[in-house]
View (tube, protein in one colour):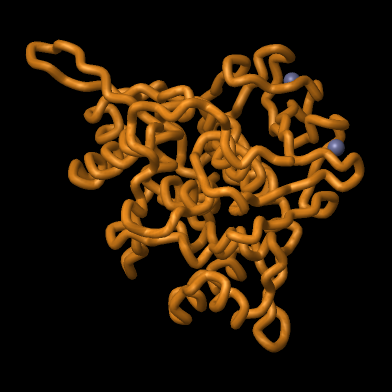
Length: 325
Ligand SMILES: [Zn+2]
Ligand SMILES: [Zn+2]
């Protein structure tokens, strides 16, 4: 069976405190709470790709307000993704290093990059280089049991009896406002399509529910405990992005572009269920149908088919395109 708990001894840091007084929450629900925020994703992306470690580094790279950045870093420390390390620079300052659990998010971020490259086709985005073959790579997901490619269509996803998306809380400061957040261009670009989908937790939760087979407006509403106006907004945006298509009688289906997001959600699920403590019976169990192996995701290079490792990837800055591209 899929491990609900990682079996690691609990760290001296507090367990995820997104819902300190609420009911015990599934690992995937906690992960959506921690990572379903566009600033968090951009902070992590810069930490991985540019080795940004300091408050000033993120502030300057992202153009993020200091109060927002401070709040996000505090949360990421609370959830054990960064650890602050003091250093002297005239006075004592802190740098934020990815913990082991934080470092293991690399595959999730790589999957986001890969989807953005394949489906949003933006120019001017960095290229990931697979060091072993020396080529720009668009990683794809394979099964650790049989080595075949995995997709939404050849997997079965079942939820534990206690897994409820209605328990995914949305802190006030994460609510989407009417004014869109200005995303930075910077050296890396911002993966804008992915940020629309993953950048707030209601969006990610709606998408996760769609992968579990929820199709009707009323079922999303019941499953997620989401306000109709918020749900309408997210479904409309997903249709505009081409991730969902609306049928008659308010039925929504994943398009091929939406189904391709499976890699991202599978890697998020895998990370969450390995790293975060959660009650029994709350796991999302993803099985590769052709071989029967419970999710054991492996990312491979689409050029040489070699298995990707965190240390075997580098980043190539985009070549400036012709004017107007
Ligand atoms: Zn398999
Ligand atoms: Zn390769």
